[in-house]
Amino acid sequence: MRASFALFTLAASATLSACGDPAPTYIDQAWIRLSPNKETPSAGYFVAHGGDAGGQLRGVLTDYALKVEMHESMTENGMMTMKPIDHVDIPAKGEVAFAPGGKHLMIWGVNDTAISRGKMQMTFLMANGDRLLVDTVIRKPEPAAAPAAAKAGEHDGH
Ligand SMILES: [Cu+2]
Image (tube, rainbow, N blue to C red; front, top):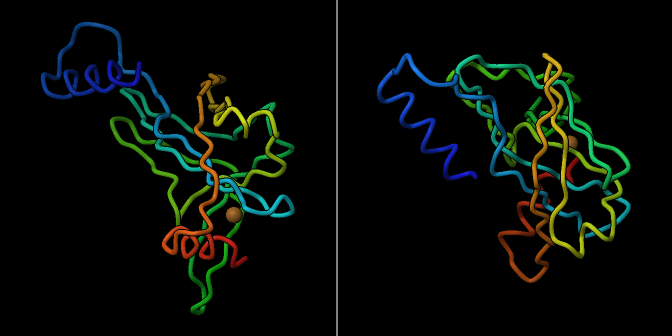
């Protein structure tokens, strides 16, 4: 499914074809970095693609966690802080990445069944009323790996 979307997008942008359906707005590369500690939220990342029309992301829901918020990390006065964001514009034919160190999801109380399955479905709410259902991979923390620990620390700082 993901591969066919990518092919379609490439073909559409390469030929500027006037025929066929417009490229949709979609989400891919969605994953969760599970917090090593149940008391602290996990972080979620993904890439939102605007398709031909673009769109505005207004929030993310899931049945498999207690709460999900959209946040943005930034450096203020040399300190890493973050603030909630209530919408994100996704430009037509462009993309917006939620990635470590920048925009991210904060996810409280990830469901144990989802953790053991290694994935969960999330619903991305668009301003036009569309709901994009996205399978999100859950990656467990790797305490033995130093790079992973350093990355986790970057997000735990707030
Ligand atoms: Cu955050």
